[in-house]
Length: 184
Picture 1 (cartoon, one colour):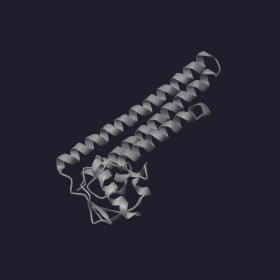
Picture 2 (tube, rainbow, N blue to C red):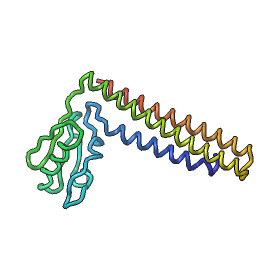
Picture 3 (spheres, rainbow, N blue to C red):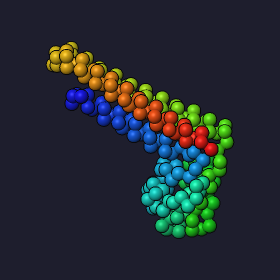
Picture 4 (cartoon, rainbow, N blue to C red):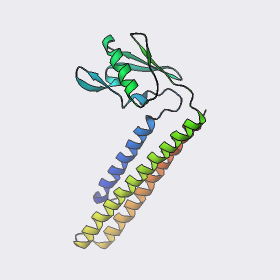
């Protein structure tokens, strides 16, 4: 792999990392503190990630416990969770907030699997677009006669192998999440 195509491999790595982060935020019936990653709380006038204002723990398989470092933050954290697309109503005792995750229904599991597959397809499209950008760059170099045809051909093959590798990784990530969702 040449330096010309390394840039495109880095972009595909970022695409895969983004997909994996998004997959972590999908709840699978078990408590996973990553479902709170996208939630921000108004902390002295600035939006702050929930993990920065509270201790998040998983004391039981289907419960997340949030203990704010400042007692006055409880109401704001509850409000932020209710405003999010989490779909869980938090309960609090004034000091600690608890999120109880109900068992997912079969219908909800199938919906989530569809969402996961859609995310995977979007990641594959992004990888293919990155490959297309790389091939366009190589064609321009070929037209300008800056690089030999053999080098261009080697770079195109390397770019295709990289794309295939990342599409396989996307499929593996989607399959793993699908299996997790369908496990009762």
